[in-house]
Length: 622
Image 1 (cartoon, rainbow, N blue to C red):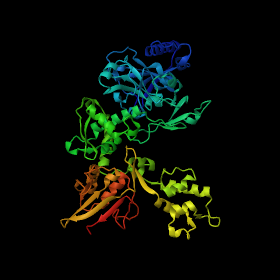
Image 2: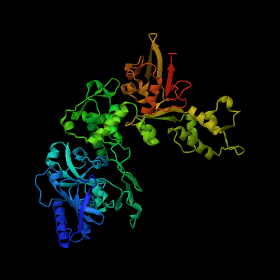
Image 3: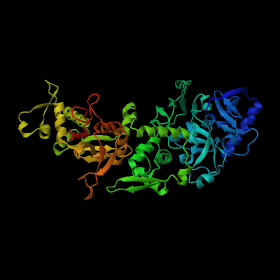
Image 4: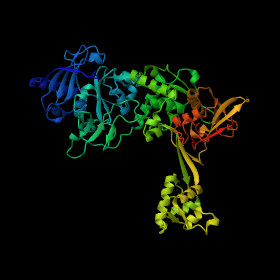
């Protein structure tokens, strides 16, 4: 109702008698919302609301109805609206329904029954969406009826006012699916923007029994706007918590708010469960193909190319399911989709059930749908360049992560014992370097005449020198010691794909192989193998190569690639033509492989061109 800027046609101070009538109406609202609650006429939050004279404004919101708004200072604290305009109810008093705004609810939260949701949903409400029942985190009070006003609460603060779209009994009967509440007013709309942006939350945190755990005991949350100086709003006993209300989008990698001087709020496992369900339902409705020829699809593709496209903040490991496979199997039991486990344990998506009643009833707002389709189109064409523009940490979260690790051998472990380092610890190269520096300092091994050289003591001699060097080598540079110790330690590596936990493996990671060869004397084909070592499903890679390579792709079992004796079956991807450059470009842009060197037009990965330690290119077509 207040999405767009509106005109204030008139503004007058309330007469004393009118203000008393309004206060009586507010107290009746409070009593109706909290049967058996203590009367707050003498003092309390209601008295705070009416501590000064209110102003009545006539507001034109662009429709046939005028809205009466009641202001307290810069903030509108109450509005009188026609419920038939928003909730679909058939009856109302001639004066309309009195509703508190988020400013009033922050002072007295019990003016309305509350509905708790999470920050991921609030972003959508701020974009103009209504509240769907899957986004409700706490049980709905049974006394709520269709058309009843409610307060939407998230992370300890009121964020919206809405009308119930159905009775509470109907919500429960529907399995908490479908549209639950029609939003009338939300933070960041024009009505909120009229105020000073200051929301007091002390009463809210103290009174809401269903409030989520929150370590922040600040009295105020200051929502930063262009015309408000947060530094001017202070507390006597502590600094304020500043929330920067940015131009929000469902596709922002950041949270709805950025908190300074306070710990970040992490979604509870139950909240993450809801977010996963919402992302899956949205993917089924918007981006997942309905053509059966598009399946089977690796579940990692479903998660990274569809669900995370809907909500980049998804983290399966933070949900109650912990694993993507467990979550999807639970959704399979509901009838949303069908899964199949291939030989070797790979889980794939076989089909989605768009005709399921809960899927059919799920509604995605048009703005969200258009943005998802736009992002999906950019992803499919291989034209996305988000990895180049995001910060390093944000980009890394979207790519495969590989960490080279080292484990101590017996001879190296004896060195660590003297400096309090566990011999069974796993080290990165940087951590090995730091451990060496600690050892040098504790043992006082720096050469006094040349600080660049380090004395080789008995432990270092045993760990890094060969027998013929025992008598001849007395000093070495730090880098030489680091290289030798890393060579003596047992190589290991950790690898993880987006949305999955890291996997620890023995040995150094083997490179992904790109082989170009001629078949039948004339036809050239590019063969890619060992992508499974990098947690890349062959079908996913083949699908991503079609457009940039402008050629057909095929997935075939790799000759001698397992499949027996309990070993997983390995595959290779075949692309018609010499497509080394295109394959390396997809590896770089879609999976985060880093290439170095080479000039314009150089074929990536080939000698004389760009190089990547994780990619091995062999061209037999020359």
